[in-house]
Image (cartoon, rainbow, N blue to C red):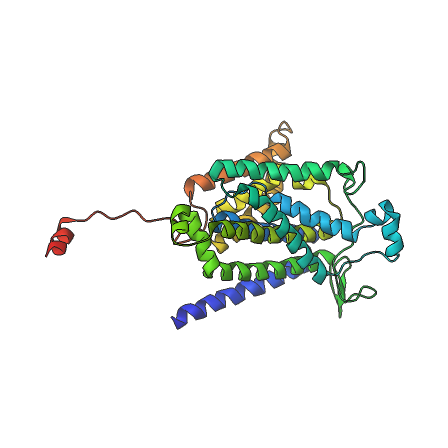
Length: 379
């Protein structure tokens, strides 16, 4: 037992050191900020997949509109951290002449709380729906939010419509006048300079580690066990005294908080948000990350999110040479989508339960009673 615990701690510490050193090694190797940016975006998708795993993996509620919470968090931070509201509404500019530069310790709970409220509002009317019907309704909700953001510029311009919101402040830690860390500027430590994209990578890494701890504790708690009981058999769970209504609403709200926080981080990281960033394909990709990795299993969900987030960028280097081999007759972007689809189909055929499924996920088939065993049972 002690050896097993020591081995797990050694593996955990090794992975932690590797994740901390990875962007710095890329920087010293001269690989450029592009690969670090891919890693940072992959961590954002890990955060999204962890939130959806609560709804789909733990509670068994198929949610195809999870990108709506992502959009809510992104637009909340964009409106608070960009000059759009001050230019559109003079009375706000007169009240706050220096602007509203929201610090990070206000942004995270505000984004989580707003997304949780939206999650509960979504979950309330769909409590009695299951399976495909639930998926269709949540898909429609996600599209409604996107269309709503796309058209909310008349008669009052709030979201700036399809043009999106730009000039968004980067995340900061410390006083507004002189922040200790400005994630939009490089950080100089002695003779070493840490680029802005690397700072965001570390911020997202801290959020992912905190989210993994929260999800693990939820999984081991009474709430997590209640979610899994609802996933396996809702009628039996209700018969055992579980308040399935409240548990479902809690799953929707808890999962939405992760989407809201990751959306606010995305807005600060990109410096620009528009409705095109929150399309149906984003929801499908997040669901695919959870399913391909292994529903309800945290390491599997993280693996699926990292692979599907990084795979399109890695395949850019494969699609280019293949396009040259065909004399340019194949479009590189279409070829890249084809390769992604082939990879996903191969995974589902070879690993139908996911790349790294949970050991207790699913029920083992009952073993037939042999003659010797039946004789011993009679004796």
